[in-house]
Image 1 (tube, helix red, strand yellow):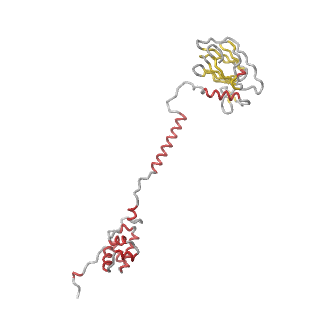
Image 2 (spheres, one colour):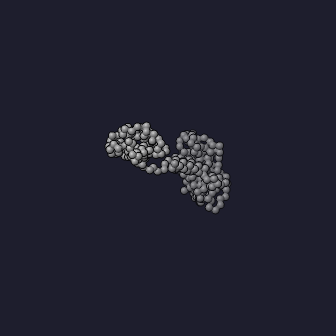
Image 3 (tube, rainbow, N blue to C red):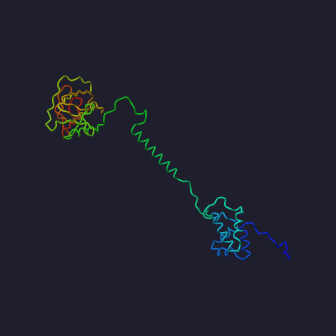
Length: 294
């Protein structure tokens, strides 16, 4: 006799349900099935629940299904075929199980764009600063007036260079003497004793109120710097041997001679004594409104 139709049950279509039905039919628990496969009980539960996405790539899922089917005495091709027809397959394969992906910490946005952008901004700012420092801002600080002479602090360097013994000098196109480094210097007489200063002759130009007229006569080459009472440079040049220079400006005059031993002086037509030396042959002094040296 054939068994009653009520006892005939249709086999489950999903691979997980087939595995669970066979395990229960054999009287095994999930823990026992996992121990026989050397797997974690969670993996057995995921296989029977058709949660294949948590097991990683399809190649891993098929391996677990094959081993589980063989341990229960089922045909592995039947279980694998049911898996292929199952809608529970992974849409995109991955080698990392879902359980591992859930443990991965959430990463923030990459910071390298900020680093690169900051470096580029710093470079542009540095180049702009260098350009402005070298050329200045266009349209600002420009005038048709001639450039101001060097600061007074540079006069001491020029005068000290002029006093250095054996200092080599060349003549610039403007007629000034310059050392190898480009600093104007006074000429010496090549080691010989300097000639005594000649006293200027001839009428002195009339000086206005508060002004003095200073006449210089050079018996040898000497650098000369003269600033008026307001600090403005009225003479900043090299006096050549045999030449004369006359300066009329507001007193007091600040005078620096690179080689005062070869320069004769007169104020308002009145001869002055030799210029006092402050360092070697360098002379640095001032002339008051009454024409006296200070």
